[in-house]
Image (cartoon, rainbow, N blue to C red; front, side, top):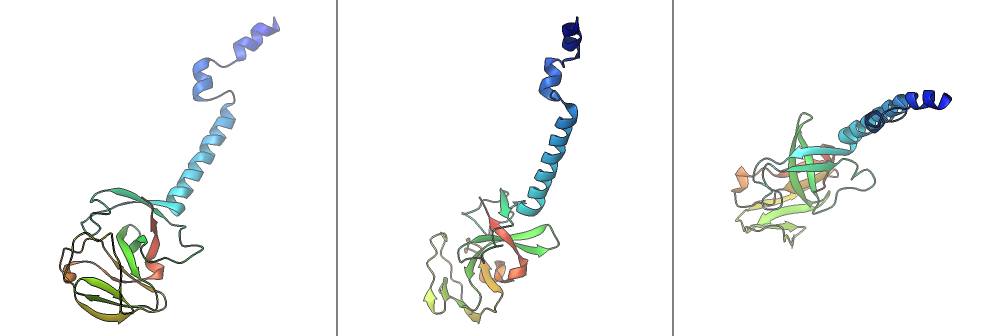
Length: 173
């Protein structure tokens, strides 16, 4: 007789699949997963949409990428890293490549970047340009960033010095 009572108390198959044997434990697991996902989404992996053509062909327009916000906790940004830079407010960011590091001198001559007088090898730049820009020395917390698509005129391209505090993280994809 007690086996009939125990069988009637057992949850059905649908309840076991959706809720589990212990609804309180399942609710606790769901809450923990939601907290973990929100923390990761807010502080670790920030999704961004690439708008514009400045990073073509490396990153396609209207593509979704993720920013690793913890990439530069232990080490500083490096030349060649594609980073997200806070431009305006919390949600407007630029996606650019770091080409010069703090303390370096950067110049554009005949479309090529020169770092401390040496031409920088940039295999990711597919279209040649004719940019000219006088040498400029970066400060201790400044990085020079520029897009990979150099087919536009220098004045029409959004590039320049980015302070370290504006760099949010490295683009993952």
